[in-house]
Structure formats: structure tokens, C-alpha cells
Length: 242
Image (cartoon, rainbow, N blue to C red):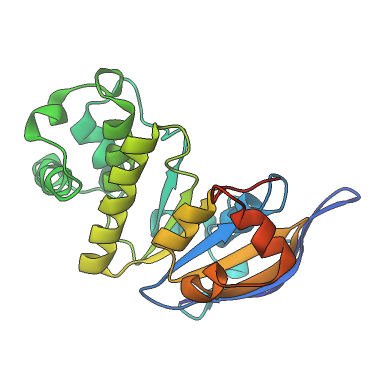
């Protein structure tokens, strides 16, 4: 589904990502983890060309994205971020269905899809007419996930989506993602700083350090890894220690 081959990204003299090769199989969740500045988010954003790479190649369903229209590429890939990015002057319903609006779907169909997705992510129907500021942080994140699913993309990118919510809400959102993945089998690339989150959500885990891929394996193998840097990330609390 996603094939990243020897990808490098530079910012001047600084190398943000260095010759990373990674394959994400269809229907799997790949979690990218590492300390701040390790290149996780840069690598994630290169998949939908929010950041263009300097060397290497990325293929999505066999398509070399270097030759793809970036706007069309992004509309076919769901994207969830920590800050959520909901439009404050839109209702929850219109936020969920925003991509469908860009794709030209009529409003009755958009509203129907928004209602179905709200149910799917555990939001009560009465929130559909509210504005984002009227929701809790956890509800806003659920809206963000629903919006990413609106056009039924095969691929979803998630950049530390639960980093700003309290631990109890975070666990509920993690459970939601596990349930959705069990039902929908999306291909997910998920960035986090929390190793326990990585081990909970990921089929596979990739560890980056200073732009380089230093580990990739199943979540089970990662949990038992004796590789020093991986053990350091797991730490006493399961959170990235650096």
C-alpha cells in the first residue's frame, strides 16, 4: 500500500530524514515513534506531499507520488492532527463533511454521511449542529477522526492526534481507533511520542532517531526488543524519555 524507498529530506545543511525505507502493508497500522526532532512528522507529511522529499521515492498503491497532483493526492488520504484544525465557523456536521463539499457532493448526501460517521466515532447526534468550541477536547478529536474518514480513504495519516487530551480521554480514543481498525481495516500511519500508545495501536512499530530509521518490527517484537535505544524509549513509564 505505501512503499517508502531511501527517502531523504534536507532543510539547508540539516538532514531531517535520511535514506529511510519503510513499507506499510494494506490494512495495517504502522506507528512512527522517536524523540522530538527525529523526523517522524516530516516522514508522515511526505506521504501526502505536504512536505516534498529531496531523494528517494514514495509509492502509494503503486503510484509514484512525485508525479501526482498534490491536491488530489491529499483529498484521497485522511489526515488527523493534534490541533485538530476544525473550522470554527462551521458546524460539526459541516466540519466532518468538508472534504465531500470540496469533492462536489450535494449537501443532503454530505449531511447523511456526517450523521453516519458521528455515530461511528461515538458522537451523539445533537453535536452535529454545534460549533467546535462547544465540544470537549475528546469530542473534537472524534470529529477530526470522522472528518478523516468522510471520503472513505484507504489511507489515514495521524500526527500525534491524542497528545493534548487527558489520560482517560486518550485511552478512550485509543480504544475507538482499535475498534474502527478492526471494522474498517484502513492503512494507518500514526505518529506518537508515547511508546505504550505505539505498542497498543500498532501492528508494526518504526523507531526513528535523528532522521534515521533505527528499528522496525511488529509491536510484540518491539516490546521485547533488547536494542538499547528502543529500551530507552520504552523506559519505566512507556513514554519517550528523550
